[in-house]
Length: 391
Image (cartoon, rainbow, N blue to C red):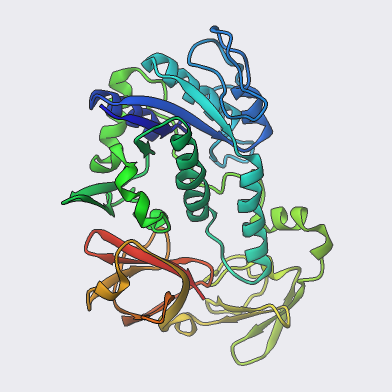
């Protein structure tokens, strides 16, 4: 039996993960990572046992007691976006922990989460397309959570991600989840290789319908809960509204022209942070034929649009690489995934031994809408070898 710290989001995946860990004989400690005021109020409510979060936010209540639910259980946001880490999610996680008889704590990560928000805003203002979920995994879920695990002498950290840890001798490897429709291995590439042996991903070997069935059989009350699909801190409206609210001094400063790849001015826009590479809808101009965002020129504030073929690229360069294997041992042929909902694409990857933090990718066939700011993740079949950030 091992002591395991489990990130509990209040969703069906992490809830069933708790059951699977207990079934395997582990000692499980549930942790909710709070980053907003609503979840803070729920997590710090005294329990029936009298516990409550300490001044540093390191421990909230033990399981038990009744928590107030703001807005009703499982109620979506006003604009019907389903996020995570809300007051309702904290209450759900607490109830599941109580039902399973495991301790439940909360980590106050509001300061850490501001780093994620700042990265998100700054990337859009730099003409890039950020991926805050990957950064959150790197910095918080498999960053600060490991710090907490060390503080309570835990052997492992576990989450409800759909990916698999596969033992190969004395080394654990990160692999794609069994359910290809829910696989989240792409978002985990940035975890330090030294931490793989301390990671557990209990639901990765199941398909999502079976996880929901288990939750129903266990009477967890979250079996039908929707998956979080949206950026959890963009609670309503368009992401560009959030960016402007966080950087009011930039309102109007990023406005400019919309031009074609031939250089013809066809319109104007209120701010380039509203656009991403490959975007077709919401361009604000009528071209008669489908046009897409081809690039964003932050120096001139121009958004360049063109036909689909203008999006094609033979390869890419990525930096800030994180390797889960020795990059000198990469296979000659690999798969490279360039977006969360994509699949690995046949390619060759070249790494300069003198600068392993950067690599280049040459695809077998040209690919569309390669967006700077997104991750390029390298696979050998189902195994994650590493990745970096597209430039």
